[in-house]
Amino acid sequence: MGHLLALALLVALLPLAALAQPQPPAAASVPEPLRPWIPWVLGDVGPEACPFRHGDASVRHCAWPGPLTLDLDADGARFEQTWWVDQATAIGLPGEPRQWPVSVTVDGKSWPVVARDERPVAALPPGERRVAGTIRWAALPDVLRVPPGTGILRVTVAGKEVPFPHRDAEGRLWLQQSGGAAEAMDRLDVQVHRRADDDIPFLLETRVELQVSGRNREVLLGPVLPAGFVAQQFAHSLPARLEPDGRLRVQIRAGGFSLVLVGRADAPVATITAPMPTGLWTEEEIWVLQAHPDLRQV
Image: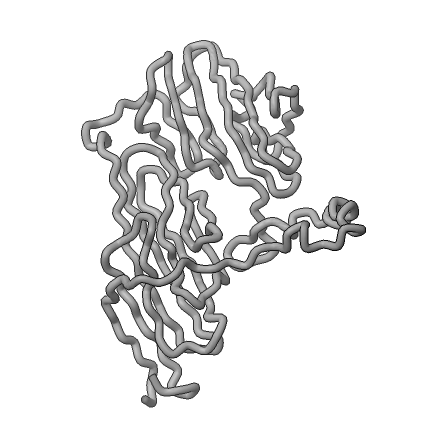
């Protein structure tokens, strides 16, 4: 071959073992005399120990949000949310300057709230944290701002559950809307496109397109990468993370979204087989091969 080859393939999903991910050393592997020093050694690590985004180590995500529960009526809003925090970090709260959260607690203790870019935030220590608070108003507003990093909302208005809360791209929750019959069904359509790049190292870009309707919910997709590949970059427009078993945990809501995961082979590649999913996935994948005849013949 003397030119770039692009070959479209439909690949049937075949069984493979789940993707193995590297894990940090267990405390038991540290010699006994040094174990009391572990907190001291890790104390100044800071956000460098948090997962990074898009292959860019300068952008870190140190907190994973749980569902945000909102109980709204004509007097105000009560909210509650659980966060998993890897390193001390500031998380966003519902509200804005005209709808400022008050009586905020973390694990039942009164907690300070500060403004950042005119949005309320609270600094949380590491661990699993339960955040709660209230917002007061004279009448139920049309819109309430919610943290953009939160994927799942559970909303009640005047004691009535809102099964399909409507949130726009700017993170605004619209409260004065009525759901149509077309919203009554939970549906998730998954399309997968992969680009295999026969470079050194061998790279595999996987693009997962999601079309979602119905409720806010959390799903597991995949495993995504074939055996012998490790994640290198991950770009996503929804709260998402790669689990140790190679599946993607995603907090989805109605709309269309893209997730792009780039993996690299950890050894020379002779063949590639798509993984057998144990979570939600598509029955067909579209593959494209980018050959490099200056390196080898395919």
